[in-house]
Image (cartoon, rainbow, N blue to C red; front, side, top):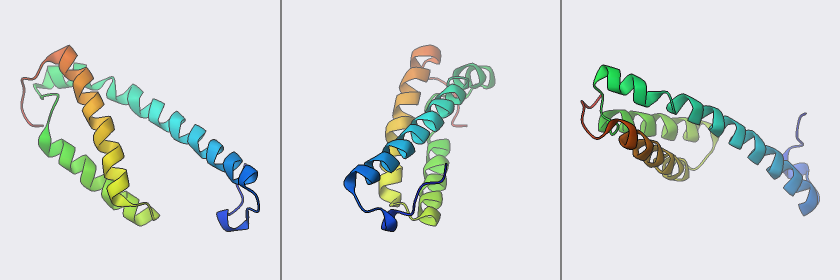
Length: 104
């Protein structure tokens, strides 16, 4: 269902409905992202890649910042949110595969 343009919304109640719908969609996408990142420890272990791969982290953050800019989202906000996700994923991966490996 298409949401009305933000500038056409007349009440906070209607605005909150739209925000709640967007939050649901974002959570759904983040859950899908997590299912993909859950596959990483097996693949990283097989390929000898460390859980913390600084070059990959920077590439992901550069990509997110660029996408944020192109969509009118504050790139610093996007980067901060992704850094939290990245650190959580790395912590899970390190519990499974340790800290050894290459920067892949």
